[in-house]
Image (cartoon, rainbow, N blue to C red):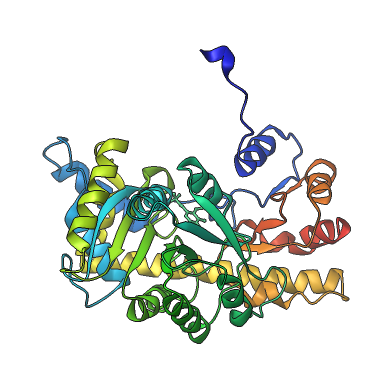
Length: 392
Ligand SMILES: Cc1ncc(COP(=O)(O)O)c(C=O)c1O
């Protein structure tokens, strides 16, 4: 059987990380994979996470299975941290998922089972794994436009392209800190987008992987709540990877936002059945850490403070890079980098220039031009900017 296999292309982001690890140059710069890095180039464990883990080691009494849906209290705490005032079982239902990626997969499978004709509309550009996950379940994929090198978002143009969608199609919307562009609509724009989706009978499928990395936990969560306030139903994938810095613990939530009595419970049973048939039960550790933090006032405050430090550094880096690029090359308007949010921004390069950047000057960015701005050390920002503009 194995000889029938054709080697699959490896994910671009994983390929770039491998190439970076193998590069021996001392002045190489990794702006590839999307993990936060501090000024020393580390991805630290948050103090609140360490404290929660110490507690778990001391107090955990069993390692028996968690249920198919994971820990319902974790699901409830995360959901209510994003959608305050809503009640589990009444206004939402959901399961613990294997990271935000697992949440996207479970929700997409659920939507496709409920509407086998549904097509999934992705922003162009988007996180490449959206296409990979949807492709893996045989879903039809369509694209709608998203800005790359300007902070101006034309919601009318987006909605005009969604005129080609059919009622019941799903529309992936990044909750904020768009990956890879960093360009988000303001709250009014987001509301207009949500209203446009509802008017067309389209299902918002909100991917929230960076809550807390934009303006603040509450401000970023309010973006998700704004869509939930407008749409009668919503699919919501939450990731705890970045905002709790627990990437490898694979922690997320797949949420159905709707109304009890309007199919919420039956859809939840389908979500559970899909989870059971996929991996049976999720891992416990990351969700247990997040629950411990969210339930404890002091730990929660400490975590939010650390998250604020992370966000501030990212925003300083965005501003610093925009200024350095402007010093290096005046004829381009770099303000879109400063006006964007989250870890990513796009550089207007061809795949070939991105390859030369990696191979010739040791700056690793993704072939579509995505840079992880969070990984920049501001002490070297002018030198990095000079290398980037030389590739344009
Ligand atoms: C847009 C988007 N969605 C979802 C995810 C999933 O994150 P994870 O599976 O690591 O929680 C990511 C991570 O890179 C992302 O950028």
